[in-house]
Image (tube, rainbow, N blue to C red; front, side):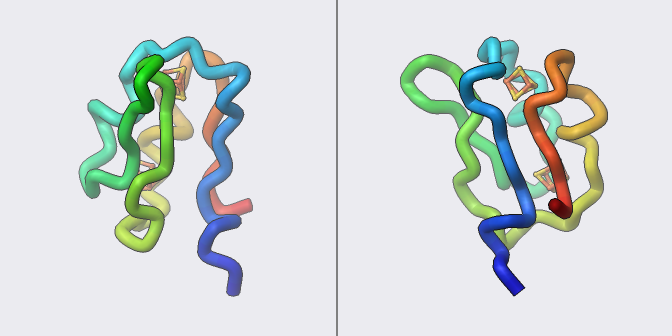
Length: 64
Ligand code: SF4
Ligand code: SF4
Protein backbone atom coordinates (compact mmCIF):
# COMPACT_ATOMS: atom_id res chain seq x y z
CA UNK A 1 0.00 0.00 0.00
CA UNK A 2 1.31 3.38 -0.98
CA UNK A 3 -0.15 5.90 1.44
CA UNK A 4 1.15 8.87 -0.51
CA UNK A 5 -1.07 7.81 -3.41
CA UNK A 6 -4.16 8.12 -1.25
CA UNK A 7 -4.51 11.88 -1.71
CA UNK A 8 -3.62 13.45 -5.02
CA UNK A 9 -3.67 17.20 -5.41
CA UNK A 10 -3.37 19.20 -8.59
CA UNK A 11 -1.44 22.16 -7.27
CA UNK A 12 -1.43 23.91 -10.65
CA UNK A 13 -5.22 23.90 -10.80
CA UNK A 14 -5.63 25.01 -7.18
CA UNK A 15 -6.77 28.61 -6.91
CA UNK A 16 -6.13 28.87 -3.18
CA UNK A 17 -9.76 29.31 -2.22
CA UNK A 18 -9.16 27.61 1.13
CA UNK A 19 -12.26 25.44 1.15
CA UNK A 20 -10.52 22.06 1.37
CA UNK A 21 -8.23 22.76 4.28
CA UNK A 22 -10.99 24.64 6.10
CA UNK A 23 -13.36 21.69 5.77
CA UNK A 24 -11.09 18.69 6.38
CA UNK A 25 -12.15 17.29 9.77
CA UNK A 26 -8.82 15.53 10.30
CA UNK A 27 -6.33 18.34 9.71
CA UNK A 28 -4.83 16.49 6.77
CA UNK A 29 -4.64 19.47 4.48
CA UNK A 30 -2.83 22.76 4.92
CA UNK A 31 -1.84 25.72 2.78
CA UNK A 32 1.50 26.76 1.38
CA UNK A 33 2.81 30.34 1.30
CA UNK A 34 0.57 31.00 -1.71
CA UNK A 35 -2.53 29.65 0.04
CA UNK A 36 -2.55 26.56 -2.17
CA UNK A 37 -3.34 23.15 -0.78
CA UNK A 38 -0.61 20.92 0.61
CA UNK A 39 -0.98 17.47 2.13
CA UNK A 40 0.42 17.82 5.61
CA UNK A 41 -0.70 14.69 7.39
CA UNK A 42 -1.84 12.00 4.94
CA UNK A 43 -1.91 9.24 7.55
CA UNK A 44 -4.82 10.97 9.32
CA UNK A 45 -7.05 10.92 6.23
CA UNK A 46 -10.22 8.87 6.66
CA UNK A 47 -11.11 9.16 2.93
CA UNK A 48 -14.35 10.96 3.78
CA UNK A 49 -14.02 12.86 0.47
CA UNK A 50 -15.32 16.14 1.85
CA UNK A 51 -12.36 17.90 0.29
CA UNK A 52 -12.78 16.16 -3.05
CA UNK A 53 -16.51 16.95 -3.14
CA UNK A 54 -16.09 20.63 -2.28
CA UNK A 55 -13.12 21.74 -4.34
CA UNK A 56 -14.61 24.01 -7.03
CA UNK A 57 -11.82 23.10 -9.41
CA UNK A 58 -11.68 19.33 -8.85
CA UNK A 59 -8.07 19.49 -7.75
CA UNK A 60 -8.23 16.71 -5.16
CA UNK A 61 -8.55 12.99 -5.80
CA UNK A 62 -8.99 10.65 -2.88
CA UNK A 63 -8.23 6.95 -2.99
CA UNK A 64 -6.45 6.91 -6.36
S1 SF4 B 1 -10.85 12.86 2.42
FE1 SF4 B 1 -11.62 13.80 4.33
S2 SF4 B 1 -10.03 13.36 5.85
FE2 SF4 B 1 -9.11 13.01 3.84
S3 SF4 B 1 -8.10 14.96 3.31
FE3 SF4 B 1 -10.17 15.00 2.43
S4 SF4 B 1 -11.48 16.01 3.96
FE4 SF4 B 1 -9.57 15.37 4.97
S1 SF4 C 1 -10.65 23.58 -2.48
FE1 SF4 C 1 -9.51 23.16 -4.38
S2 SF4 C 1 -9.02 25.19 -5.23
FE2 SF4 C 1 -9.63 25.47 -3.08
S3 SF4 C 1 -7.70 25.48 -1.93
FE3 SF4 C 1 -8.49 23.35 -1.95
S4 SF4 C 1 -7.53 22.35 -3.74
FE4 SF4 C 1 -7.28 24.58 -3.96
